[in-house]
Structure formats: structure tokens, C-alpha cells
Length: 122
Length: 110
Image (cartoon, rainbow over all chains, first blue to last red; front, side, top):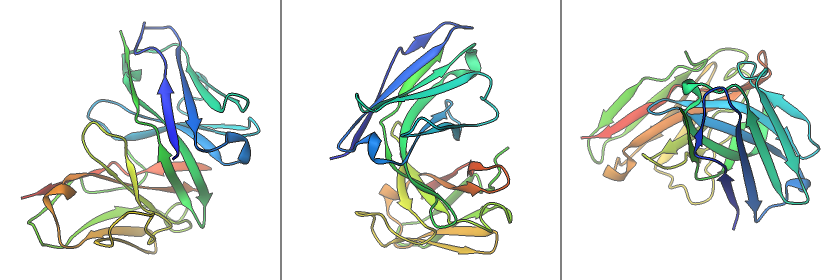
């Protein structure tokens, strides 16, 4: 059974760095695919933060590019998100997600989602 | 402002057929498959339709997807009360070289 589980502080102070880790079970990150972070502000829609490939190649939403860093640790089967200089606008539920594929054939196929973790910036 | 445009709300009565639209452009829906996600309050989104019209395992065939040109649609037939949820479309955008979401549609079963 595939599971993705986000972990990290639920409360971050303004101007500090938000750090989250996603632990994957039932799949090996090293076997490929992109792994994404997506967030959802309270009462709002879904927002893509960035993607990381198992090799460590990253793609970031330009909106976050100056503040975001993603990394992968295949030995722990984890990938991580760091978002610095946070403000109240970064308060959201953060999801880690597996991309089954992208582009012409797949669109943006997100097949496995973590349950999400609420991070409040105050 | 989302790149993909969805109506903010939709509604129907039990047993009815409801459609939700998703409008985009040539660089996104016009070039790539569309995926649909269902989200209940307090839970993570779930993949409902992928590759425009295919069902992931476990999704009932009451849900169906279609795509024509730069628009896509999600249809729900035999509407049930448990279908009341938020629905999002998403795809890849070749111009942005990144993924894009619709703003979401809240479906109410009357």
C-alpha cells in the first residue's frame, strides 16, 4: 500500500523558514517519477510549489522560486521542502504528491497524495 | 487568477447528470491531457479522471471526462449525495513549462 506522510512543525514564525519532509512507503523514490509539493490556503484552491525528480533535479513555481528549496534523500525514501521568509500568506495545508506523469499523454497526473499538514505562520 | 477556468459552483438533484467545465488555452488543455480531482472537506484531493477520460482504479464509471480543443468537462451521472465535494481540473502548460490548476468547482447536491 502506497503512503505519503508529511511531517514538520505546524507553527512557524513570520520571516522564518518552513521545513517539511515527506516520507514515502510502498514505493521507492529512487525508481523514478517526479515528487511534488502542493499547498492549499484556507478556503482556497490548489497551488503548485515545485517538483523534484529522484535524481535531485528540481522545478519550482516561479512565484516561489526565490524562497523555495526542495531536496531528496533516496536512502530514507524521503523528500523535503524548505520555504524561507514566510508570512501569514504562507499559512496553508501542504501536500506531498507523487506525479505519475506529465505532458501530452499524462497532463499532470497526480496519483498519490499525502494527507496534508497544516502549517500556520504567525 | 487560475490559468484554467472552472465555474465556482454547480448543483444538481440526486439521480441527475451534472457537468463541470474547465477552459484553458492551446498551450495547456489544447496540447495535453486533463486530470480531474475530487476533494472532500478536510481531506486530500483524490485523482478522479486521468488522461482526460480514463478512470484510476476504484473510481465508479458514473464519473467521466472528455476533452475538445481547449476545453474539458467532467460529467457525473446518477448524482448521489456523497458526490458533494470540490472538483479541480489540472494539466501541464507547455508555455509555462509547469502544471496548472483550475480554481475549483463546489458541487452541491440539492
